[in-house]
Amino acid sequence: MPLVEVVSRPDLRSAEAARAYVNELRAVLVATGASDARMEEGSMRADANISVRPVGFSTLGTRCEVKNLNSVRSVGRAIDYEARRQIALLEAGEQVAQQTRHWDEAEGRTSPLRSKEEAYDYRYFPEPDLVPLAPDEAWQASVAESMPPLPAPRRRRLAEATGTAPSAVAVVVERDLDGLVLEALAAGGDAQRLVVHAEHDLAGGKGGLDVAGFAGLTRMEADGALTATQAKAVLAELVATGGDPAVVAAALGYEAMAGDELAGAVDEAIAANPDAWGRFLAGDAKVTGFFVGQVMRATKGQADGKAVTALLGQRAAATH
Image (cartoon, rainbow, N blue to C red; front, top):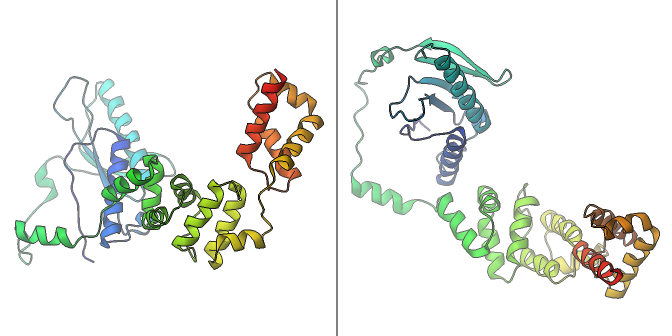
């Protein structure tokens, strides 16, 4: 793969915007197969040209270029530091020298590499063995038609289909799990739980998990046949070996608790912890987690945390 340099216009106004730009560029390169875009391995690097200007001024100040940043985190940190450095110089009545600078990740600062006062210092000249490349519109259109779906439209599609927060959707698309989620959704899976599991529990890939198994697992969880904790354990087995989620759940000894059994466990936890119950009645929301934990231990993880919380609320309402 030849070296390609992508140059953006000077239209980024913050380190956050620059990080987002680099992240999106990485996603496009990976999606198209142009690169694995592993910055830490040198497959992709970023240079940042930073300049500042006083509020109300339209002219960009003298820029400094920070070279060979090897992570998105470094891009943000280097820009923030360099902007602060330039502002401090200007506020002290000094001038910013046009330079190429090095970023030291350990020290969190930039340092000079070399000065470049004018454009001619870059010593640009035409390469006689490389002809100019000017692709016509027809060729560009044919390439566009052959491209795979890019990350942005994939995120929009998944967000619209599941009604999920953009941040969660972005992680799922980055892991290339959006196709699995959409197919499982079409097979009757629960939209919210599909995305939650893809975001939090499938970081290592889907393994032996198939569409039917994923959809069935989230239906069991939504119907109350599995708690969130149990669903994670079943999912781990499905990723490792595949299979039917109901069969895996039965093999693990997971059975839905009867309502009266769960209510009894809640009552026992309340009776065994009168001080904590008094705090709960007084409005201390932090105690909720304590009671959920007590019931979980008593039922060996079979209780549904949401159901426990609902029962605690009912008991409190009856007390008042």
